[in-house]
Image 1: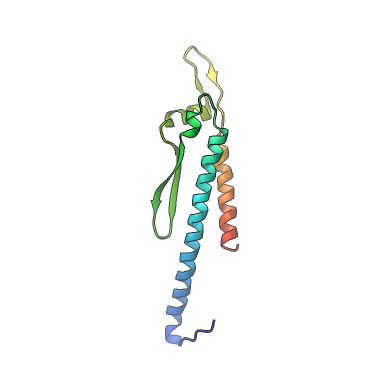
Image 2: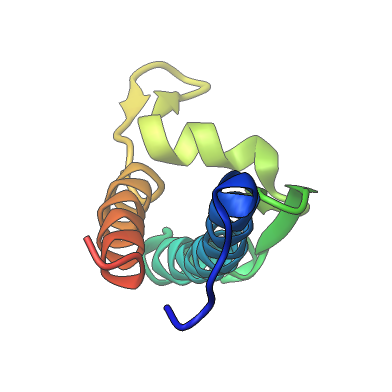
Length: 126
C-alpha cells in the first residue's frame, strides 16, 4: 500500500501483485490436494474388505503430474488393482450366483471431494 507508482507502471504493479497471489494460492491448493489424497488412502484402507489385510495395505498415493500451478495425485492399489473393481461392485461366483459389492472407494472419494472444496475455500478466504 505504501508503494507509489506512476500511471505508466500501474499495469506492471497490478500484474506483480496478481502473480504473487497466484503463487501463494497455488501452494495452498497443492497442500490441500496432497492432504485430500492422504485422506482418501486412509479411508479406503480403513473401510476395505479384509481377509488377509494385503489389499487394504496396498493402497498408495502417487503424484501423477505437478507443474508450477497445478498438482494431480492418484490414489491406487499398487499390486491388488485387479480386486478393486470386483470388491467395490461385486462379481459372479464360479459356481453361479453373485457376491455382493462392498463400496469402499466411492464413499472415500466423495468425502475427499467435499473436504478438498472446504479446505480450498478456507485457505483462499472464500
